[in-house]
Length: 156
Image (cartoon, rainbow, N blue to C red):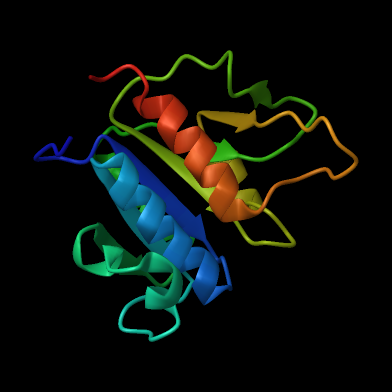
């Protein structure tokens, strides 16, 4: 389902892998009504590595590049779009119990370092995906898909 204005914004906070960025595009296309905000060191089109995992979604998903994550968060905050970080912390909320309202923005962070402290400090909430295995995190693009589809679950 396509909407005139995106219902979900994904703020990509310095994710370094072009293949992960391509996966963000493909997942955003699958969900519909999603815009990507690529920040800092995150690769952005045109980049030949992106299409290997995006599989054409570079042409169907709205995106914008920002030199810093601060600029992306400020731009969405000016539109009164709540910014929620996805990161495991002592005070983070299980994504399954979080109350989603649309439009909404999610910050997803660097593959090793996670969401930046600035983004965490500027977020209205921090949510996490519980891990049941021995690993403490998911691939960032996989985590984005889980959160994105959960946020959009309420619309037909």
